[in-house]
Image (tube, rainbow, N blue to C red; front, side, top):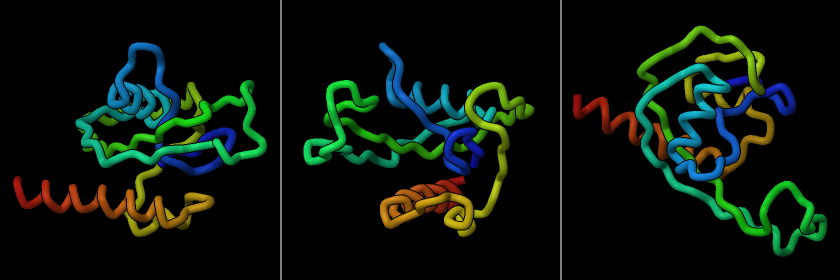
Length: 127
C-alpha cells in the first residue's frame, strides 16, 4: 500500500493518459506511486455513474459515466522508494490487515481483495 499525500493509505492507481491502455496506466501508476514493477492480471471493473449526482456538472474532474479498472500485480522488481510523485510512504502488509489502513473500506473493496487473493492461491498451485 502507499500513503497518498492527499488521502491516506490506498493502492496505487490513477487516471489513464491519452493512448494508454488500462494495464499500461496501472503499471505506470504502480511505478510512480509504489516504485514496483511486475506482471498484472485483470480483476474486473466497476462503472462510476454520476447521472444522479446533483453535485456533478460539466466542469467536474470526472466524466459523467466512467470506469474504475482493477488489477493484481505480481511484483517482479522492487525499486527503492523515492516519494517523488503523489505518495510519501510504501508498506507491505498482510491482505487481512488492509481494512485497518484503508479509510472507507467497504464491501466492493472486500470483493476485489477476495478476487485478487483467489488468483494468488491459483498461481501458487500452478508453480
